[in-house]
Length: 328
Image (tube, rainbow, N blue to C red):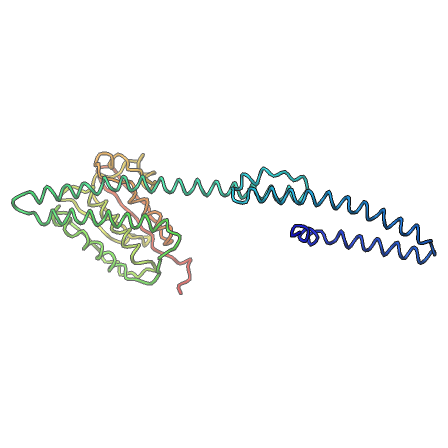
């Protein structure tokens, strides 16, 4: 009975049409003064064919409802098996196909993201074991080398910051907070983070104050600066030097006189997981530091690029101008 009520509501215009036909015959009967018998005969014929049609259509209506109910708890693929030759049915079929295609793409993207995250954490675990093992060896020595232990702790802390940044990069919620900050304060903060490494490896630092204020997110830009300084320290020989200054086109430059980057690697250093010749030789590179820097700079609307000459220098150039954005 419930289905019949729904059917009548969905096909109410058919009943309106029946009523109109009845009224038209009644008008013809009145105008032409026809006998009642032909009128009744016409009514009976109309009702007969009408209910035959309605009965057949209602039967299809019930079958369609039962078929949809049977696959209600299943997926879209099962719904695509329903055949409907009407135009509306074909339209719904196309919509379901698009929905299914979107669903499959979302599943594949999610699976790829999970696999990439698992690969990264697997690599991260192996990398973080190195400083832990180094600390264990240092603790076994009779005289503790506090500077070396502090250096290993700095590496562990950096790896931890990197994995947190990696997870936040793919989070649906953004934690960016833009405000004007003193660029020199951020640079000094990053330098202090690696002060132990600078002293232990006798690396000379030349920092020329920029005297600039930039519109950025302080936390994320500090992360970028720390990653760049970490790479500079990693590939600069003992007794080498690192320079931090502003060039003629107002870019922040972090330059070292380390081993440099070959031309073949230079074009790919920002690719995810790419370590290049230096990374493979060093055995400590994750191939994610510069990738994260590139992604963060893109979100901050900053630019990052690298210039290098093997066995001579490496320059990382940061463009921190965000004039396209309205400061609120």
